[in-house]
Image (cartoon, rainbow, N blue to C red):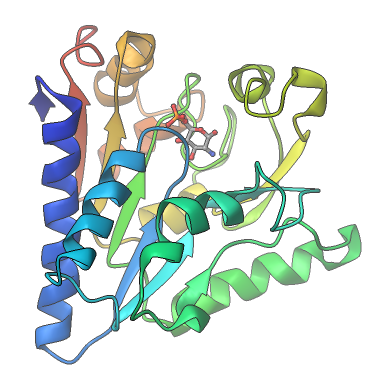
Length: 245
Ligand code: GLP
């Protein structure tokens, strides 16, 4: 779906998320959201916060699982995705059970990583699986932090970040040398297990990779291309990001 305006696109996404939360609430069920970070989803969180503040959206039945976290950062670090989620969403929500928030822990020791990743997968399963997964798109086609070459079968795991990913994050970290080299991320298979997937991308610098993700061959060289095999995934682009289609 192509929109002329990124704000309109973000509003549509926020409406779908709100609708999913409400329809689960009306049946007395929890709604399990898979959440993304980066600059792309921030307007979506802004809309959700607005709906919540206006008294139109409760988060009482919401359970969240974030896609990823830098390895080696503490949750209070400015650039951590824990901090990002607090600033953009969770700090503004007054009726959420905070024990329902799950974000991979980037500050565990190496020896604990494997167990932590397994437990993350188990927690998603125990929550009933992800109802709706929000995704941004990395410039090399990554979803979460699943870089080029990641297997279709991958579940939550530790990854080494691509040079381009680290370059794109350099300004957030005040220099490429400060960007962590590793991260924890849900795998491709974890993402594909979500019942609904929304991938968003804005701007000209995503045009080439958006086209390769949507129209190119399904290949681990473009991890987002695996979404072509998902039965209920939608790609939402602004005009600039759609210019390569
Ligand atoms: C990071 C995140 C991804 C995100 C990507 C794109 O690498 N781990 O989940 O999709 O950046 O970021 P942006 O939305 O800022 O372009």
